[in-house]
Amino acid sequence: MTFQGFEQKDFDTFSIEGLDGRMEAIKNRIQPKFKEIGSELADYLSLQLGNEVYLHIAKHARRTVNPPNDTWLAIADNKRGYKKHPHFQVGLFDDHVFIWLALIYELDHKRAIAETFVNSFEEIKKLPDHYVVSLDHMKKEAISLEDLKLKDVERFRDVKKCEFLIGQHLSPDDARTTNGGEFLETAKETFNSLIPLYQKALRSRSASN
Image (cartoon, rainbow, N blue to C red; front, side, top):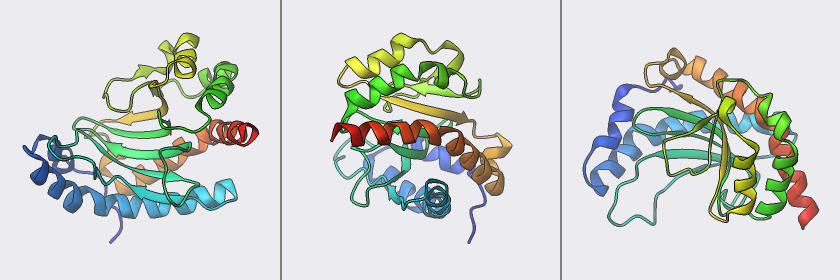
């Protein structure tokens, strides 16, 4: 089975009431697609980066009552986990797909990496205009790259819980969402454009060790 694209039913998963019902739908509808997408994207990134990266699929294991509002796959250079490391993500909320380079609050050496991003602000602003930035992976809202200010990146550096996720959102009815081949090409192109930032983050991490 090859990835055929996301369909409305995948997004409707997040309107299912209750933890058990929603988790069952995530496992049955979305995670098999994540395995297909993630395997191809991890192989692609390994080739582009010249070192092995590993696929992680969100388990939402800590949840006992509230069902998740989104779900995702992550690709990182650490086999055991991804949250403490710069990583790439593909995931879904009820109204969009996100394709990110993600640096979330558990990030090791966060301040050093964020300082590098502050110093790379002009480079970040040269990414495609339709890209967006999130400072909190729990929220659906994002800042357009056009509206991104230096103070937003400084906040990522200075506020412990502030995060930095950059990439793009696709709507459920976008042809790049519903066509499997187009989606994979879009994800690869997005990741390609973000690899220089990812590599800067890795270099900052190494310099801080």
